[in-house]
Figure 1: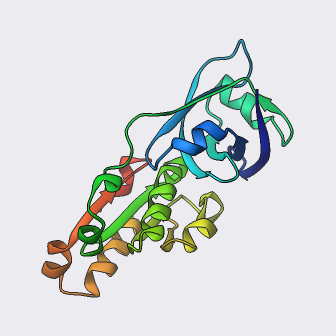
Figure 2 (figure 1 turned 90 degrees about the vertical axis):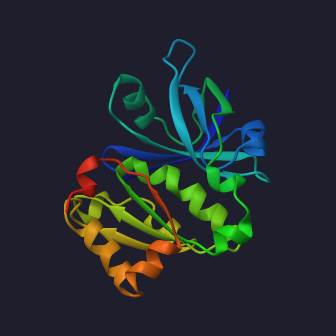
Length: 202
C-alpha cells in the first residue's frame, strides 16, 4: 500500500496528490509516468509524474476526474492509501538526453493547458536545476482553472492566458517581438504541450 501524504483540490475537478513511493521517486525522470490502482479491484490508471522528491521518497500526481476511477481518487484524503503505484514507466523527456550547454543556447517555451500543465512542470523544474532558462505559457478558460502557477513561478517565467483561443498565441507573439523574429526562431527549441488543439488557433 502507498500512503497519500497530501491531497489538495486545485479546481473542482482536478486534485493534486503527494504519495509515498520511495522506489519510484528514486528512479524517475521528467516525462515518465506511473500506473496506480485505488484499490485491489480497481482499474489501472496511467498518470504523468508531476514532481518527485528523492530524499523524501515521494511522487506528486495531478488528476482530473473524468471517469469512475478518477472520481474515486477525488474522494481520497491525506492518510488514505493507494493499492498500487507502479513505475517509473515510459521514456524520459528528450531534454534529459540533450547536452546542457546546447540547451542554454536555446529559447525554450512550454505551452500547456488544463491537466496538460502537469507534465510540463517537472521539465521546467529540471531545466531550472541545471541552469537552463525557459518560459511557460499556461492556457485556461478563466483564471480559476489555471493550475500550478505558483510552482512554475519558482522555476520559470509563467504567464496565465485567460482565453485559450486567443491569448496563448498573442503572448507567444509578444515574446517574439522582444527580439528580432528571425533571431528568436534561429535560437528556438520549441516544446508545445497542449491540452486542447484550440490553443493553437489564431
